Image (tube, rainbow, N blue to C red):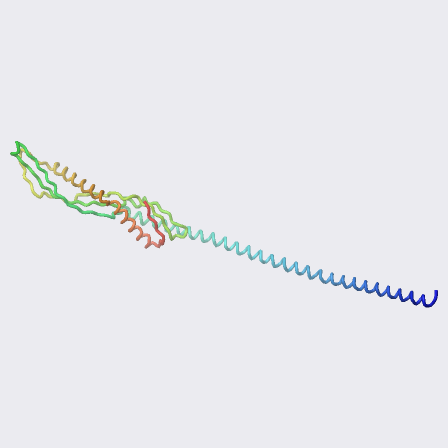
Length: 236
């Protein structure tokens, strides 16, 4: 082999060695880059994991606080409702019978009797006065619902009734008695009773019970407003 061939061969070998060295260098560099990227990626994943864990723990803490707050608020509201329920019940029982409408009236009753072909005559003119009372017989029978906030109440009261129709005074205005046709005290009282019932019937026809219920609603609304209720519904 000539000198030129040896030189050419050495040149090719040197070029191959350089190429091999360059390839090894690139591989080594790539390996270093991969090794350097590996820790960075793991650090990033670790940071994100810790961040998500902290966020989850904070959300869990907030949820626990909200649940505990709601439970505590419900307990406080329940206690307030129970106190108001007892207070309203006590107030209604204290009122017991509630008279909302009173009507005073007076009337004159005349009773005449004759006998012996009209020859014997007796008569009595009686004047009397009375009072009709209407209202709620027993407020303790009211049913109620108080909302959770303790600001609203629905009250169901019994219907209004006639609480009394009492005679206050009776006096004889004029009279004439005959021994043949005497007028007894019981006869006079019976006539007064008829007139008393007639007066009550006229008052009922005029709507005294409806007026009494309206007055009861107005009075109860005032009482409940003074007790702190803002939404009041009163029903029968």
